View 1 (cartoon, helix red, strand yellow):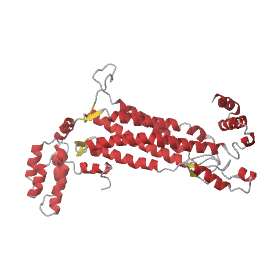
View 2 (spheres, rainbow, N blue to C red):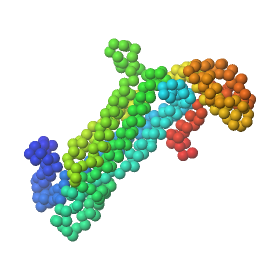
View 3 (cartoon, one colour):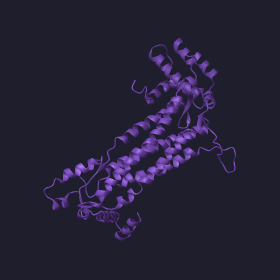
Length: 389
């Protein structure tokens, strides 16, 4: 490396420095007769685009993707565990129709699975066609050779998808697609972090004290959700870089400018921030536990969320000709909007409704804890053993 650095200090061109080093190494091995073929008919981008495609593919498939799938598996296990844990939902930050914690985590699992599949299916492309993508130098040296086929065979032999139509550079469209997709994954994970952070703040999750850990330099009682906050920051940095890469790499003046060379040097930085976030989220999920009592308390003081069920049942009764109540929605709005209502008060209200005995019995038996619909069953869609059923 020191030898290469000395050469680059003279050439001020990284690929040319490598070429000279390879030529000298070949000569030292007694292979002077083939040394002249080093970098034959190539432009620097013929070398660099293939190197980037191979290294980025390895980074994504061998490092980033396994970690992302590990996170999804961790989250899936938690969702399956908590599929039947009732929870008060919050839309616009306000109490809403109950759900289960497992179902809400399953939403994120499902989103991530779809996005990771789109990352997996991406093609990594390469070109090997000379200074302006025309094989001009190749044909000048040997006009009888099928250089297009040779280029295709070489690129596909590396396990890449051959791009036949380029300028001096490979167009980087696959890179833009990749970075957009990984950035999208990051935004979903950022949403997960802020949600889990909120659930911790609300007491739904309690943090498990870690031996020797300190939450605050002055407040001894503190356990801070640092894993999720750290992940948020790293995801924001990763997305900023990935979005910039996706936006800038798809443009190049005329047949080539050098802006992509500088930009691509930050790919590793972007993926590194994303990887740090993945690690922190996995660790963070392992340091929290559900607090059923906290969730139950929140449900117990928000019986008004059953207003949706009551007005919907009344409307169904009216439609079936079993009730003549006018505007059930307005009736429940008057009763529940801006008010806290207890279970006894709500049951008394239901008992006085002009609806069938069967409908009345269903509503009287209902509680916030039981008003979760098919939440538990929906979690089956992230269970590999049940997803196909």
